[in-house]
Image (cartoon, rainbow, N blue to C red; front, side, top):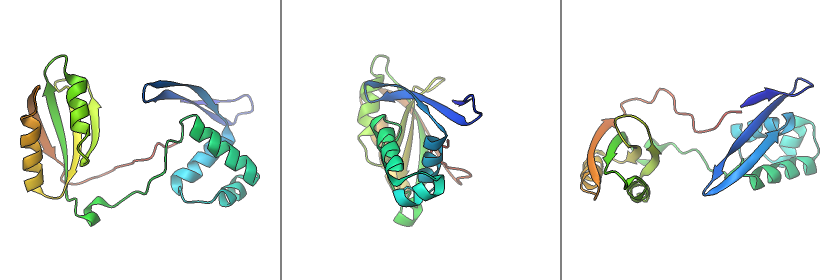
Length: 173
């Protein structure tokens, strides 16, 4: 959520949970937001480069990033990979109906598959939405059959993504 401080600088209120721990609300000032934007654009950027860009000292940037990590606002750093260049040509979105009372158990079992990139608990006709990246349609066929045969899975539907129009993995601040 964005808010304006008395001076008109942009501030961001962030709250959420990390695992089972509830993270206390944190107030991000303009410097935090500028640092996050630079890291979002290039997480390999050095603290020295960031300090120069935001007109702050190296130690200030280092302390701010460490604070953002400790508060769970920055949860890690990872490269953005071109999945298709690695042979993962099939992206599928799978709706799953799960027997009542077994939702979390089934979702946790599904999430253990390394090819599964997202498992969502959703409202609507389906109980869960699963996003999976696979190398080919044979792998998709095997995945869907294994998923459909899991205990407490009542039904599935599958959509294969033909083209990705937009896929943003960063949270933009």
